[in-house]
Image 1 (tube, rainbow, N blue to C red):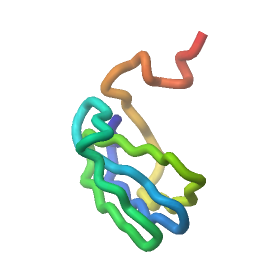
Image 2: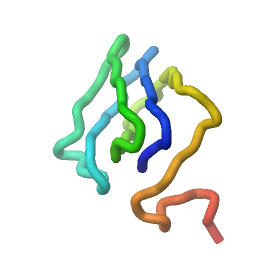
Image 3: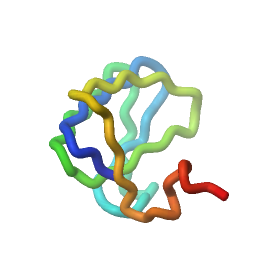
Length: 79
């Protein structure tokens, strides 16, 4: 997915797996632990997932927006 604005993500606890690109590739994701930080420019395609309980802080200029690379991944479009 991507956002029309820059986004800053900080891992508070747990672990966040993060990668760049249009498709989730767990083998290429970077694991960020507590204190880990990502600064993404606007419209940067990326993915993130957690395999353990994780708390993150997201900072961005609003309004917040999200565009999915694959519209089938958009949870608001679920049947």
